[in-house]
Image (cartoon, rainbow, N blue to C red):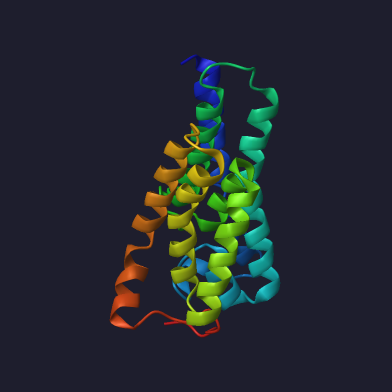
Length: 203
């Protein structure tokens, strides 16, 4: 791998590492890491700071997932492993959000950033996964349950819609990372202690 390709992977990581949720919370004099679930993602920002900042965080986190892979797809010349490399740029972006260099290699759970990456991979797969996400969240009230269901479904949707695409490997790795990052949520879901998305108060 040439130095230029390594640089692209690093830039993808650094883009994903930008903690928009924390930046927005600090802009209003708070630290979202110290309230609610302590997560910097859109769900906790919405719970702690309200819908406006929650939506802004969501859009920025999705955008920082989509933009790097989109730009790489434009400027990267054709080659045998081009699609796989684009997929790993998406993976690097999600890793950046989850383990941000700006936050001491801590971060969010990667769902919104992965959404942006998967939106480039396959809009149709995202449509299916989002439908499942909405159905699960509506029926259970738990964003974490919807996120886990949608993330687990994405690799299958990619395979179903596009066959044995090189994007399957990075997509599967992203899905596994999302499940790992949600390990505490999984425990709370099993114990019946997970908070509903409607809950604004923290604990």
